[in-house]
Image 1 (cartoon, each protein chain N blue to C red):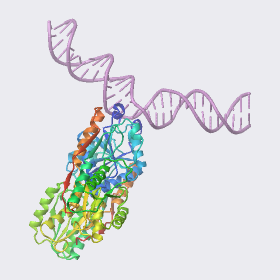
Image 2: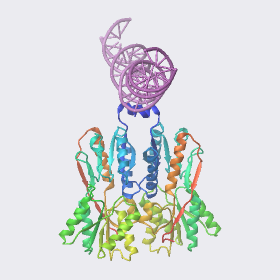
Image 3: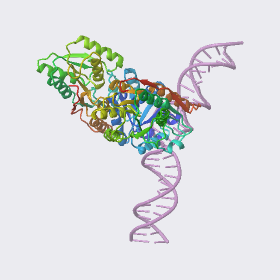
Image 4: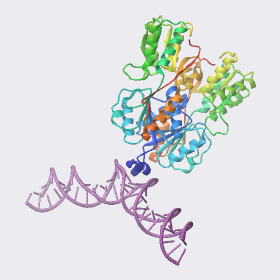
Length: 275
Length: 275
DNA sequence: AACAATATGTCAACCGGTTGATATAATATA
DNA sequence: TATATTATATCAACCGGTTGACATATTGTT
């Protein structure tokens, strides 16, 4: 502690993410932790899910030089503390401000691939679920790509909000409502695999046959999803690479070096049996 | 930092678990973090998976009063540092030593319920998978219960090792080998849901029909498993309660109060379609 | 042996929030 | 007004690993 006081460095890095009770963020945090440990940092974790206040509290406590840097992937609204402090910060799949480097999967390509998978397998009435629109995140490009591809095939794009912060029960209700609203629906691009799984279950309950009656493509493709639900066709985010880039970028920032402001990493397709 | 130095308390708690890239531990860590945050503690996380050295490194760094307490659920062998230090420690589902309180689900009851589910649905040749035997953990009681119940029905118990630290590919191979070794197998009690999922997939690949040809019961029943693979019948560990108890117990220890040395929390059955 | 060069040892100052002692100001009571 | 009581302000000491200055010891050179 005396060393920390004297040297003004704690060898701590804070991670602020929605929750580790999620296959994608769990894997991401695990990968980040592994690399940070190898680089001599310990990891302070903050799950901010549903709670901008909690995110703000974390920030305030961490900014007062308790950590040497921050990797943020939380899904909350803008928080001014990020702007005022000069703490090194790296964002994952989230736009913070002009100075903060962003690491993201190739969301546009992912959305394009997903939509094309659905169209090429014969779907015409394709819905895309996504999070709240007012949230500035590179993940919005998934929907943009979806809309572009739909338009290029002269198909009408429809988006449907399934908020990331809702609990499973509320999500289930929203998804059931979606089935009511779009009875002709024969394809769904879900913005993450958990939502895709809920869609699948709801569809099965309603008597749909997957993929004959309804084609489903998810997003994330985490380790756990690929073991528990390998039948789901999904866009795989390159979690290891994103973690690698985030850590090296953060360490560069801590050293004071310049880093690229945006790093886009290619996605892959996991071919299940849902298209 | 000066405050920490003067007061000799950091308001930090360390969590040492195998990895958050796992539905059960991810949920557990998320629940622990939530409660620790509410109690005014920040959370230092250490994923020790596969790496007793890493666990030891974490311990050494954390013990030198960098944290006020420790909650440990790592799966590694005995490490002497736990004994030498007087840092408040709580263990989850792991036997540390006589002085360290343990929080665990009712593993024996879980094993009993799982085995009875399999037997009552008609299975006769039931195999139980489990982790390495030389590891002292309350989870071993699951297998004890399995053996006891089998014996009480005059059935022969067989156990098969699927080490927690193996990667999925190695686990798949081990499971395939298990199918070869026990061709008459018609029921499996897997020691965790990820293994149960792998068993299910292997069985399907080999042409088994679940649950007609083979009945499967898992263990853990985390949030994520119940969404991604709700068809799996499994024993649900009371994660919220375990987290609650672990945090209150740790805080009591930090205050210097006495706490019970063992707290066993009841399990529930998640009725899927795999028995 | 005498001096230079190098190695090792010792110790006060530093980091900054907290704390209790001491000093000063404000208010109350006779 | 003088004294007692209470409120507010100021400040040095503390925590302990690190660091560079200075002292002392060791080794090398002529």
